[in-house]
Image (cartoon, rainbow, N blue to C red; front, side, top):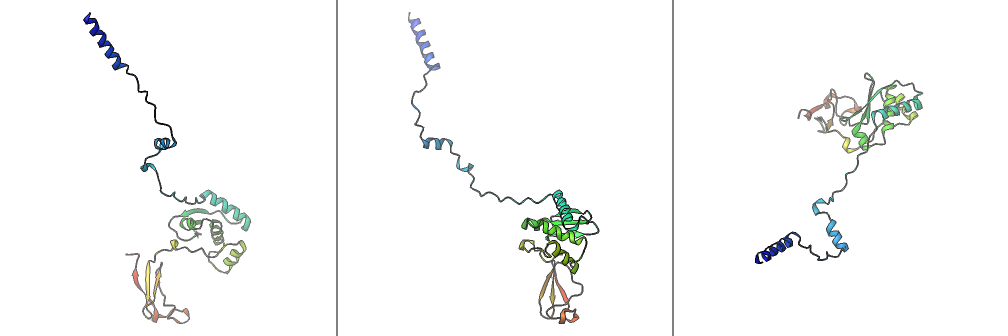
Length: 209
């Protein structure tokens, strides 16, 4: 009999271990503060940095060719020959035309600053197909089609000088991108003509530096 009682107590203890009732303590009230605490992100996951300004997307080469064709028909009766058009990442100016290569280059840096100048730049370079220099004929054609003669200025488009020349007389310095061959100081020379007495001499070569 004692053995049966000990066996029953052992089974009862086993049942309590395996099937212990869950706590019936009610959960905390679902207040709005509890929900905020439950779903709030940790401080490190919250970004407070300002959004980056989106860069203006420039026209594709295909779109530039389409614009060339439209301007050709509109202003030149479609008489201008086809040209290659490409972007230049190094050029600071708005555009350029190379007749030997039949190539129009569009300055990417310039049009990043002035994204509304594509048509003006393309018309300007299209006139160079007929008139290579900015002579009187070029200026008349520019007035006819409504394009500017000079590009806009912006400080970020200024190249650092490669050479610095100095006048031995007035000590005035002349920073330049290209080397001078025969040049004299415009302030000291008479009538803006070359005067060997005031010939500019090279002071520094930033290109080599």
